[in-house]
Length: 362
Ligand code: NAD
Ligand code: IPM
Ligand code: MN
Image (tube, rainbow, N blue to C red):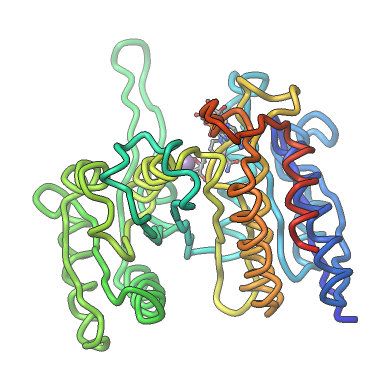
């Protein structure tokens, strides 16, 4: 059997709850497709702070470095929000992980499953027939990382500042990812920017336009981010691949998630050059429902599926996970976030959803 070393970083809040189901699904996949997922658990985020004194302990980095992929849950929560910003789970662990491993390309596929059209916040006629939008988010640059950033001065004289900055190579490489992805699907890229205000966006638009010439078979359009936020809820079917810088992609992907019914449905792959990647749900640690065993594990399970596809070369197994998820949704299984109380729906908890998906795999 093929063996893959996986760094398993459940993190905080619902992270460990949904991760447990993703691991069970991977075990079932391993049995079915003759593969071994050799998982090594490591602390990250608040769990890192509580157990090892740091959001991203060196032991965790070493485990990730020795692995073929990272399966990541979610980090953060009220318990750690009063720590110095750079020590908090998000800025102390998640962002450094993305940077250390060069995970510049974040793929967030927002697909509406036909049986979930009722759970979408959009009217049935707007989403009927489904939609399939792939948000491609630049993940290691822009306002999240560029220097200078900080808070300076005293009292009311204090100023807080961040820098939005993009280099030509940073824009080029994520643009190639978007066009290559579009080539394999709807052959349209819509690049999002704020070129009417931001200089980084003027350069972004120029570089994207130049790279597009290498892909004459793919149609390029540009849209300002404010309009894009509106168009996504007005008529999401107009989009195929959406290409964004880091912060715009963060915001628009949460919006796209809700069109599919719940943030708990949206997986993501954070990819470097080569086959290494980190796979993480797009949503967070959901402190409002953590500890109750009711979170939707589907985003985490679909993220594990993306890992099979991009880091393990197991495309058939990845498709099997997507199919199993579609099947259980058709069978009416619903965690609370996607429960509509319609005939045929069965309200289930996190573990029961995992059970149903594993049963559907067989
Ligand atoms: P959130 O994504 O955690 O939650 C937003 C809403 O979506 C909540 O009502 C939550 O219950 C719901 N939700 C999210 N995932 C769900 C799931 N799987 N099933 C059911 N419902 C789900 O965002 P937030 O409340 O703004 O942030 C909470 C914490 O999570 C913060 O500390 C934030 O920084 C962190 N966060 C971490 C990540 C990550 O680790 N990748 C991503 C986003 C937010
Ligand atoms: C995400 C999250 C993170 C981000 C936070 C927790 C740092 O919101 O993965 O979408 O903004 O990238
Ligand atoms: Mn986000």
